[in-house]
Length: 254
Image (cartoon, rainbow, N blue to C red):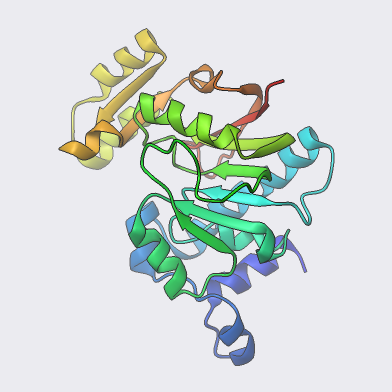
């Protein structure tokens, strides 16, 4: 079965034509949940999801020098399990973890009967709630696109403690072009200021209101923003289907 055939079946669940498999496999999130988390749903969103899954496989094979099949995988910031579902194509659920700081995300995973191991992390994690588990592949899709700079550094340090030697971390960031797009969507006028901050500092952070803004908001940054914290930058990737998500590829230093 191809990746797309697998993915299209997964997003069709529960499927009345396959009642047995529908009882065994996780139900897809509702359109409302998909749109709340991502702004899109259905086939349009699936195209982006499948594109990122292929990025993961291609870059893992290129940099780790072995197939992704059977690997230990962590989805850091798993949300409702949108991308984690696709990892079932590559590895047994017993090798897959989903971690998120928001309890609502994990509730949705449980309600959908997602397979794998799930745990709630802190917003500023000194470690991860995965015991002494280490992973071949860690990915964080649209997580570092929202983290305050200090929070991002803290998360990178925590993730470093759970990567296997020679493993791969894939974290998406937003390019500077994100800000004019946001002005158009939100009918705001912040792009000029945020672009200026980005060019001056290598990043631009717009905090959410209240206490949440201390750790969470919207951020654009250069690839070098993620450099250090025990990681070596080994490349980057981007899909034309999701141009405001730039994948930064990192491996453990030393």
